[in-house]
Length: 371
Image (cartoon, rainbow, N blue to C red; front, top):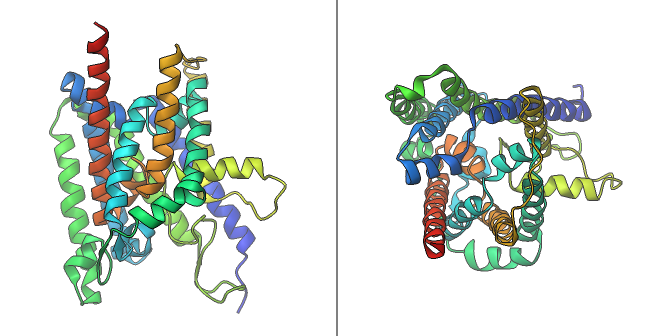
């Protein structure tokens, strides 16, 4: 039996992810796709258009991911989102921190990368600070509190926390049909809700929403199909080549930012390699940059003062700590995680939205105090 070409597979996974993320960066920049902006539009103006865009993207991601699972191409239940143990307190605390931080920092992890590509020096600072604090939470000083205090407060599930396996129970043969059924039900409901609004049905908005959701599905397929090796030569065990975790992965933009900084700082260390997550980070920035230049929207942007600087620094730190603690960001949990129908991802998503709402209210209060 011929041994798999791990180096070639790795290159394919990284290249394909970069290509998908480059297109994604262009779509998100062009359509102003932004979770924080969607929440702000509702709170400040009662406008649900961008929220419907986000919900439609989630619906497409759910429908596509669960269809992949039903077809047997990938198993969403084997991602770390759907693990049998759900760290409830980590999801809640991390989600609230991330949601509050993304408002202070003028956007979530993905929006930060888009703004970097568009010429924002403020977002470049957020990128670095968020990455450093994310790394500190994964392996540094904050990791002790996360692992020792937050993660132990968990809820256990016998087979896994994703809805298809919870509904199927002890009958593994019925998991695949439930994946298709729940994917159609939950994903279809979100897409239908979005389509009910005439303003949302504009071609540009609709294409962006479908494109964002499809990108999540595409990267699941890249890591789970193109990158899957049933028996790696070095371990004789299955392997998902090119992922940081060694497991099935899709898009996320907090921990991968930390790994990107690590790669740049330790470039001469041959053990540090370009991974799926890093390729996604770079692809999003390059895609945004290309669109900004072609559309003549590239503009240098700096801080407006001391308070503006402080808000972005604190927001970046909160996103770094919160994103790792919650096991993902608005894309990592809000799209990739939710697409697996994992209970913990829905909890993190709700906490992120609540944190964002609280931060917007805080900003309103701050403005009122200065009047």
